[in-house]
Length: 200
Image (cartoon, rainbow, N blue to C red; front, side):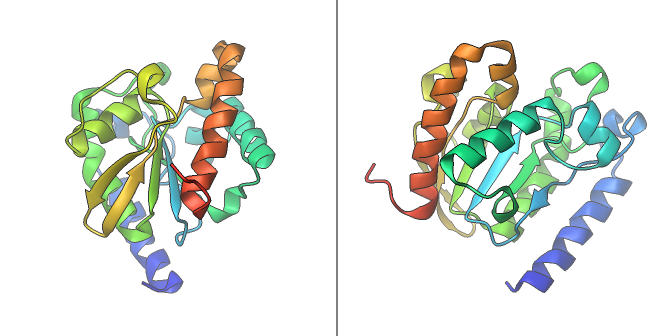
């Protein structure tokens, strides 16, 4: 799929998200956040849901967690504009609460459409909610992020074989700086799977 075609298809998804009323998150959100970055990326990072800054700007990971993510990407040598970043849920839950199961299910078709457009070879869910969503989607046993972070899980998708690579959410590091070193190591390993330099 050529880039122009991908952009057109993503805009179609964005329009569907903007007009979506499948759950009540649409009632309070300011701007839905479909995602951003390269549509030819071999890697898609997936967070939980937009926060206040993301809701204001309509862009993913532009708040405090996003700034930390930018720092980590820079340290491991991954260019943010060369990857694609999105969230499981495209609209901000009130008070930044976790999205409910019905809200995640309502948004799953948008998530599937975006992944089908980008067709990455690595999907990296960040945090418990995002990891749980993908574990369930691909028929894997749900586990706590502390048990599965930094581990590759080969899965099959509509566009071919993919590695699911769970990560701690950058927001978790803001509350527990002790996780930062682990997250950095995980991102270094992730880079190996994305760009074909890992032997694991």
